[in-house]
Length: 599
Figure 1: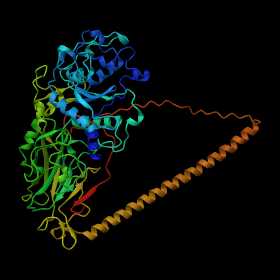
Figure 2: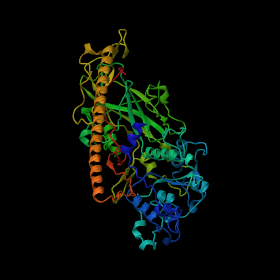
Figure 3: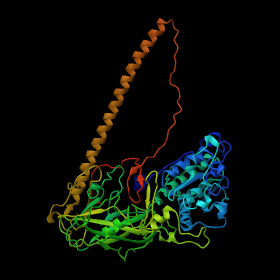
Figure 4: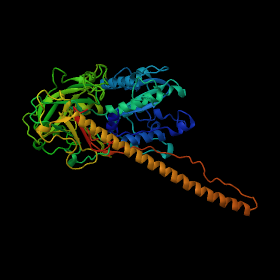
């Protein structure tokens, strides 16, 4: 779960508007003044003077105009349902061109939200069917404002001195968003015991589930679904450290030796090296495989831009690599993620990675027998996903292909849209690529029979990770317990336990030292405080005596109404679509050296 959250905050831009209708919230009213902001958007309205009348509506309009959102959620109260297009009277009794994707995403929101004692899972469907139709709805406006001009009217409000007409004239790119309505509770002010708590908040089956906790999961799932991703999980059953690290360098020069997992493997390995990977940010996995080759034979590779930004970049790179498909006896080239109604296929519970991922686990063997000692091999996992989103039911209106960014970004390699004001861009592609894995051919060999515990109690090293992605900027870590020759290809189990014992003792000593230092600091600090208090108390008494007992104690510490603004800013990173990221923390703990079968 920590890896998942680290990926989301590093590869997504997440924008939160806590209270769009601030005045209505303050007054505990639905309206802003006398106007309902929920009906204040220029879609399917008949009078240009009755849109963009509120500050809430204009605020959201400005936000959408300066971004290229793909998914968003708008939370309300009064019933319990997840609604999507259509919700406008013009399209009553019809489905949207993106219905298949909208229905699948809404179902996953409902499943991941779960239920609790006073509330079943969210019902989901079109707003026209489950809620009621409206003119000027935000959801339909965000979805179709850029491609359905007959329904959009430039606004001419008179409130607050008016609003520029050009602000409600939209280009072809801005408004193609799945902005789903979430009616969170039948009660506008649900009782506190039904709100839930943070206990196992990422698990839909948690006993702490409630209105707030399940909607936290909905928001996280929206961030997950905005873009597919592929991750290499393990090499010869050695589980790798995170492939996405917050606060990590993203420049082109960092690609091979900073931005990738690096694993040393044995040379002359006739069995091949087993690679396991997973796919996320999607539902249906239409195809997946591995590509590998020598780093020196690969043209300049930008890990964070070149692989994902344009289809032609990957096409050119693919021609320089060898392809290997998943092992047919254990898995296939197709499957589904844990967010699909079918669950994760191939099932991670049938693999050694059950404790490390809830997503599907694919595996294949890379033939390294022809590579030489010191060779550096690049390995990439590829996946093609959600191609069923291009299909459409018969009852759609208008009768056009899917129009949203989130659908076309993964089903149309020619999809190109850019915000003319901010420069944000959405680029379509069919194949999604993992960050590279680097295999370094070591100077040791595996004994006949592979890894595992030998008869004399010693462990055979098959592969170990050389992780330099936590602050180092050049080369990779060659230290630790690296076998240096064929004769030293085994590491005694007893020596390994001694190594762990020494490290544990050292760590404990450091903790005790730090703890004693903090304790001594607190004692010293308290002593100084006491001395200052005694001096001040003596001075005060003298003052009081001099003033014949007339002393007034005045408290200048006034309670302040701190107003905190929660802002998530962008950090450039292209793990997929020219998107950006936010950094909420650095999970790095130092250079890692981890072996398999040493664990």
